[in-house]
Length: 276
Image (cartoon, rainbow, N blue to C red; front, side):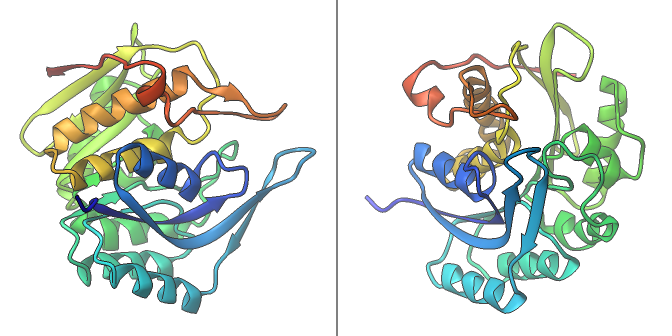
């Protein structure tokens, strides 16, 4: 039986924990055929782990996208997009493809940094990506940036951001609150324009979460490609990435990474859903 095909347009994390490495590992765990269009190469200083972001020339990005589209992906996701031009090319890739789903992981900073890579990227994402997004997966900081608000700290503030992001065109919005929203559970807020759903799992006392955001978005992409409805795809992706975080490991003195295959090899995590 032929596998569904999933394409990631994203950066390469040289350490292997996030970016296209995380995407391909996650696609494999979900039995989809993963393809890549590389936008950046991210390196780390071994002494400080500060990041170097090295964009790929646009003509090379174009050639990669042309190659991947010739194989007809069923679903496409984005990750780190280093310029407005690459954001536009990602939109065009989806519109020129036969893919039925477009998942936007609105990467704005490298792990450990707190400034947007390029302030113009937010406006470009809103203009070019959100109107075509099947699902957009911002964390709290990214949700505030996309909505034009301060970073939400409460459930009500996250819901307001979700409404605004949906109004900009995204069909389904999942805001990753995790353990940063007060409460006993790690919660994410899902909104489809009609109803809010709260997805909850136990909080995990672990800091080995490098690659979690990429893994979550890639799992949603694979689930959609495999025929799941958006809410089901997101709920199952949360269970998948929660297991990956819980079973993460210390890679070096600077960072710990998620274990991408934990849901299939170690344990399944329960995620509860309630309409709010």
